[in-house]
Length: 369
Ligand code: ATP
Image (cartoon, rainbow, N blue to C red; front, top):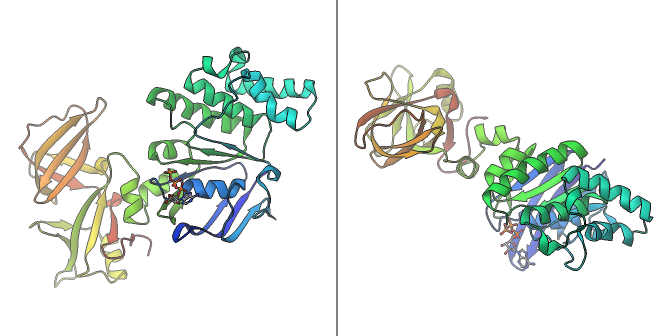
């Protein structure tokens, strides 16, 4: 069992705050992904969990025990880096046996553990090879195997498949997820690749410039982003944003007037209520909507917004059509059969249940308030 808790963790390098008051609870057996752009503090967080780096403030608890200042070697946690530092002169077997031999395991026990790990990672057939004879994917499997034989309480993986090419990465993603299901050890995984994060994590922790942005399941962070940063970072192609101003007519009906474009978006009752409850009438908002939540039509439709086809990306199983309306370019996901001429007049209809409204000033979602 391994539950990892970070309480008010702060890490500074000189004047730079690399991690700013981070609070995080990683449940036993959970697969948690730390996600964010380069320099956001992911690796530093992982290194503090492992004990390779010490926080300036806060506490780290492992199964309820304060390990903040405990040495890395005493934490019973395995760290696998992006660059698999295998010993070149040893075989795969030797590399995997090394951590066990240093811990004084018997020859039989070492053999048993290696066979278990090699079976799980499907590397039984390369146990006698040297690292230089291996492909990148296999080298990373061996590095994982070396961590696995120790049967640690938790795995910390820092961009473990970042250097592999796209095809291998996809394969390894599936394998790592399967491995986690098989061994059920708490795993903290660092990546800047949102597809990797969304496909692997039970929970995704999104960071930016040392600050926690949101913690949630992949579905929560995708469908209910708490701020513009998360909305923008998650999803490919990304969410569309439209600046607008909520206005109330004499009858009390609230609509959104699009900024710099002479068009109005009608709203259902629930969204009108959210705007009123948050006192956002006549306050600038940003409407966020994902490409798959927009309907594209080539005839007049009630409550649709007029636009013009700008560019088409053909992606096999679907198309992405960029439509222009004034200063906005809106990306719409359509069936692959939808292939209009550039410049064609069109209308777009927004799926009202899938809209997120953000306060333009605070950049925070107003949907939960
Ligand atoms: P990347 O994906 O590029 O590794 P990251 O999100 O993992 O990014 P960190 O490596 O945790 O980010 O770095 C966070 C910030 O702290 C960065 O600005 C980085 O330059 C800085 N930093 C990290 N380690 C040190 C160090 N030992 N000394 C000084 N600054 C550091």
